[in-house]
Length: 399
Image (cartoon, rainbow, N blue to C red; front, side):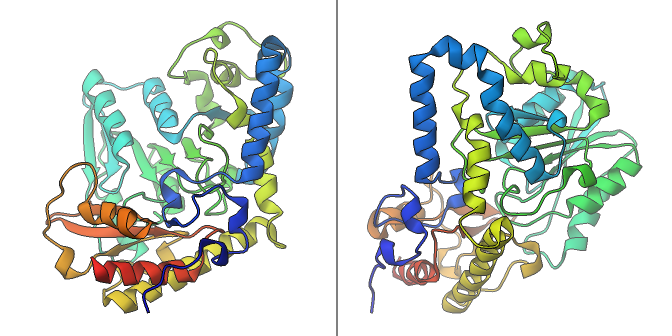
């Protein structure tokens, strides 16, 4: 029987989100989704800001922002003094690339699984300063974690200045072995920039133990903070060189109790800081949703993801492209053979558009490899449940 599941029956937690009723939203990994209580808090903060702009943005700015920084620091295993807020992880990557010294002939190493926006930032930084962009090819499908590490290390040379690593890759949803790579690269004197766009809320973090040179991540995805919330962590010995993409008052306006790193990044001209101020409340609100807190959130999402993946592998008669041990709360799966070889027309694949327009399913399609193969990616968040993935399998059979 082909029947669209009722949205309200899919998860008892779904009522906390503002997602459109009737939509089967399996793409949390794209932009995230913010729960209603946090959106209401942000709306209240915005009302206060417009009622007393100077009071809010000038006199009481720090006292509203610092609680979120402290909660975030505990959440990611860091000191508050080593963290600054940015609007998204791509901004964090650009800030690092703007700040590191590069000489002609230096190499910036990334992987074939990197995020396109960050690849573009690397390419521009290299072109402007006579450096070279090097891309480590990674296989997909892939057999194990060790293969990923070796593919990256094989491309390191004496000219490698910086290596950018996705903690969780966007296209393949694979968790890279960042702990091993950071350790081995730093031992060779090579700085690492970890793009952790998907990691906070999906994986436990301890940045003080990981200790890359730089770590940036989104908070609007798996932490479920409002759009415009992200952070940049920089190792203490490198903070002096850091400059934000927009230079403003912080460069010559020190504040008691703050580092120059924080002064430069905390104020980059007039903007709406309410997303940053909602980070702490979002972390605490999500923690209270399940009895065992964030560990329970991560476990529940991971277990649902694995069940959904096994279901789709069986129903679509496809092979797994990577081991389960490399997955968190997202998975990328190959489309059946009958979908392969079809050209893309426009920004999105026609089948992706059809899934949404005909069946109300939001799921991304991606193209990976050379020769190119077509895949789709699923996410698992607290508002999802298994019947949604069963419905996806039925709808893919109908395309």
